[in-house]
Length: 598
Image 1 (tube, rainbow, N blue to C red):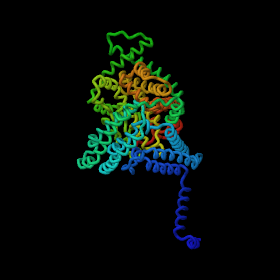
Image 2: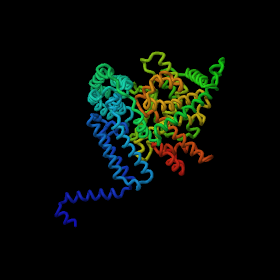
Image 3: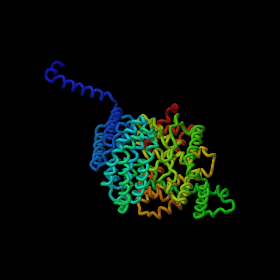
Image 4: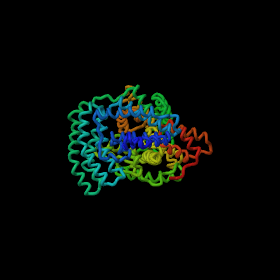
């Protein structure tokens, strides 16, 4: 047979047939789950070719010297790629032949594609939201120097290649942005000022070595010039006078977006109903704590009358008094680091869960260009570069704020609240959870993370830690935990009403300050954030309720056999999955022995 084939077809053709046969045999030898993983990896390669920044943010450094083509034509190609991949995934995958874990991975990937398609078809951030360009201007370089584990010299070389492309990004922004909402534009203006400062000063602090600094100085002037010109464009030439865009997305779009993005199995109306009930319950708990603290802070004053008005007066007065126990701006970072040690010790001593053996989380001051509408965030180690550091970033009050605004900020994030924030952002919140997630054997689950899971876990841990005894029963600490949680619940109500009704800024301000006990400064920032990020504010509460309800069900089922640390690890070991899968996967995990410590 072989000589005949050689005679008719030649060696090259026969070799090609052999290769095809080998590939076919190899494909046939793979399980359906392995084929799904292989398809996802091929899809990632295509995504990263189209969007190199996405690769960097996930920890794949093959494309670190490139920046995306973000022209309208390129963005159309992104959408077409999503559509083609969804069609291929649905036609080529035999769902029933997958293991159950593979079926869940398939659903996560399929739903991510559907979500991306809907967002591309129904939102237009490159036209309406100038902040999106900041990712390419700032994060594209900052992430290389702050989180990549490649040698510093290589990261600097890649950073230089990207800095040289910043004028192109800015030119695309100038021709693309059309009359954005004022609230979004004002944040973009402030962040672009931070970008100018970063390329004038901050970048050199990250680089360190003088020889490498010198190489960067050669390429930053054109970028800085372009950024300053862009600043004038944003503020004077065109945008600020014409920032009249509509930020409300409306009830129909809000509901569809919430179902796609949160993926918790609830409609927007159902999430709102849950939030309204929970809001009243937490208000009652706050009053109970405030009554117990009243005589400590107001020994010569009579407790107000126990009616709706008197209860709010009691809670507001005690919150105000407790808020005076705050740090100074220069001490915020040190206070956060001190709280980390105490919280870590408590977690270990009380078997809340097993912490990662090597602590790779650093507390840092938030870079200026990252500041906007929140005090803190966590930059977790990247899923595809998990040996890097995570950064728990704290934002001191900006230097241009007057003393009244600085004082309000410090009162809002007082010494008690800072501990709750550290629980949420770091231990056992985002840092610990995402370290567990980075160990997931499923690439799909490591990369396609659920926001409701990530934020819901962090909110769940705040109450859980105090319930288990952290803080030794401190009532001021409990008061701040309840206030912080009431904020998450209230934000869900605000999110819905701002986008689904005609709620005014003044109505929103009254709700946040009078009913949710937020300071004026915090409330104003929250209103801005609600205008800038429909649905996102709902992820915290919706996700927290999923964790809380699952915990209650399993604890009731197991009775005295329930182990809190084992339950938490069963939750975390599945990766950052949509919470609708939690009940099934956690129960399955609890049928097996606790995993050995890493």
